[in-house]
Structures are given as structure tokens and as C-alpha cells.
Image 1: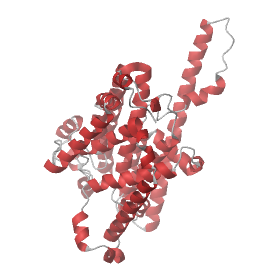
Image 2: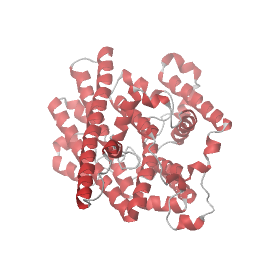
Image 3: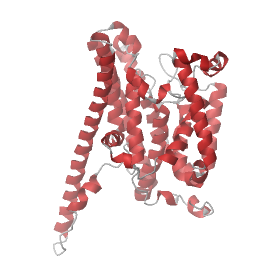
Image 4: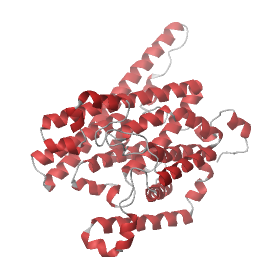
Length: 420
């Protein structure tokens, strides 16, 4: 637990001790990979596979988990960059990552439109919000270029473009006044909930993920990395675990009672009408509390050395989490392809299961391939740098670096910026 009394160090822009030499936490990549799988399953309409996700068992879903984890990852990644390269490095890296996401968003928009056009189904263009792009490509692409248009299921990418562009000043504030920064984020969230503030969009003038509201989860994740150790004993205390467990049971009963007909008598209709529909665009408070309850249980029961991380399923999730941007885009396209297959071939239970499992396997295979390419590229770069250094020092003994090349070149989603 770090000492907040060393004010001069914090004001000088130093990172908290927790970030000094912070190691790789595979849980982050694993949870992010699982969130990507859940997002894919939820994006396929009328899919039995969605019953494996959080959506049917509580107030929040994989989107909230993904956003919170992205805040954690950004704080770790850009804090490392600040230590190595200073604030100019943080700014350049965050803007470069924002540009990567921006380019991916435009390419994904075009890919979705092409798939809908090739499918030749008229109503699919309405369901995916691509009709306007197919009928008015010029005006729509201009709106997409200024982040005011996106097809269905690609809504979150423009939000991350904005967040990465602004993360350097956010990190600066968090390192100097973490609790004040979190308080300002909560205040903005409250004002959005009260006054309905939103960012203009086109053509429906609504962002599905209102960035003014969803910023709370990103800030909360980053705040937890910087200031969370001070509150960790309380978070893992028996009282917090009991409260979190009770809230999760309550949300489970409400969620199942609203979606399964035989269970409807368990939930009074008045309560159902009060709670639903759950506001996702503006991040309803019950969704935030549900995510926090899940985070409390995860912090208590999933330690950093959890043996489950070594299982094949978790290794697949870790690989997907390491390559979250391309895997997210692939998941959107696979969900659209699965939707088309359900319409054109069969919407039976066997087809739904096959498409769900096949999509996740393709995501894992793509992630493994991307990690392998990154590993080889990193290895070749390190070998070249080592050879150059040795050629400049002819009297030096050969450096024993071969055994460490793979570890050094391994993609680091915590220390790097492999995140949305």
C-alpha cells in the first residue's frame, strides 16, 4: 500500500509505487478475452450462445467489464510509457493508438456494408444501420470520418478513439489528484443522468454508448490501478463480499424473472416496471453497481497465480485479450456472418451452437496467429539490435540473449498499448 503523504513526489509527476516495476497480470488479458467472446455471442441475434454471457444473469454485461478493464490497461500501459519516455511519449502513444482505433473503425464500417450488400437482404441493411451508407455513401462516410456514424455493433470504437485522445491529460490528473479526478468523473456522470447530456450523432442523433457517461468506467479502472491499493483491504473484506454477493443474487433473480416466463412470479411486476428497461446508453447506476460487485468477487477469488490461467480455454482467452482491437473487429464481422447464416441456412439450435463455438475458435486462432507474428517480429528486432551492438563492441563477450528473446518479445498488453 503506497503512502499518500509523499505529496512532493506525486506533484512531481511520479507514478505510485504500485506502477514501478509492475509485472504482467494475465488475469487482465483473460477477462478481456472472455469479454470479447461474450460480446460476439451477444451480437448474434436470437443466439442460444448468449445464455453463456453475463447479459441474462444480471444488470451489466460484457461491455461494462470491457470498458473497466480498458481503464486498468490504459493506466498500466501509459504509466510505463511515462516512466520510459516522459509525458511526450504518453501523448504520442495514446494519439497513435487512437489513430489505430479510428482507422479500424472506418475499415470495419466499410466491411460491414460490403457484407450486407453481398448478402442481398433488404431488411438486414436496416437492422445493421448500413442502409444509409449503401444509399448515400458519400455523406455517410463523411459522417463516419468525424465519428458521427457507425454501423450496429461497431458503436464502441469511436468512444475509444475519444478516450485515447484524452487519456494523457486524464493520467496527469490521476497521478496528482486521483480522488478529485474520480469525483469529477462521478459528477459528470451524475449531470448526464440528470440533464440527459449527450454527444451529437448522425442520423439518429444518439450515441449508443454515450461517452460522457461511459467515461466513468474508464476513469474508475484507471483510478483503481493508481489509488486502489489503499482501499483493497476494504474491497476484499467479508462485509464487502457479503454485500456484493447479495446484490448479485438480487440482480440474478430480477434478470431471470424478466426473461424466463415460468420465473416471472418471483419478481413483482411493479419492481420490473421500475427497473426495466435498463438504460445502457447512459450507463444506468444499477449496471455500475453490478460491475463493481463482480469486480469485488474477482479481486477476492481470482488471485494473480490462479491455476486456471494455465488451462487451454484461459490461454485462448489471454491470446484474444492481448490482441483486443483486431479480435473485436473480427468478432463484429463473425457476428454479422453468423446472422446471415442463420437467415439463409438454418436458425436451428444445432446451427446456433455450431456458429457460437466456431466463431470463438476462429477468434482464438486469429489471436494465436497475431501473437505469433508479433513474437517473431519482436525476436528479429531484438536479434538485429543485439548483432549491431556486438559488432560495435568487438572485444566484448557474446551476449547470452537468445534465451531471453522470446520472453522479451512476447506481446505485453499491460506494458504496451494492445487495448481498445
